[in-house]
Length: 130
Figure 1 (spheres, rainbow, N blue to C red):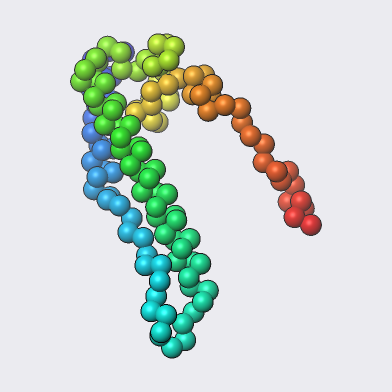
Figure 2: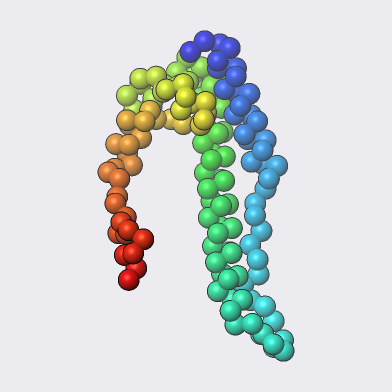
């Protein structure tokens, strides 16, 4: 990887970091409404809990991506020649993969080995619910 490619990835990583930090956390909705209010909707509670769960999951994912972006920028600063090489096998990571996810640390093969085999879903057909 040449210096201009590394600079392009650095710019993309800084852009990603800025976007993530600017977006901030998603504020979860309050789980409990006033239980003494007249006409309290009991169906609203599960919906509020689901919204909290979704917001929490999105915040965790966003924080994970942010930490990977910061780590990639650190790798670029500390050892620019090794940026774009898989941390496991030290082979070059495919350019298309780096273009899509400039913060990745592993090539596709090593990532698949780390993730394990693909699990099949329990449902195969739309009529399995019957």
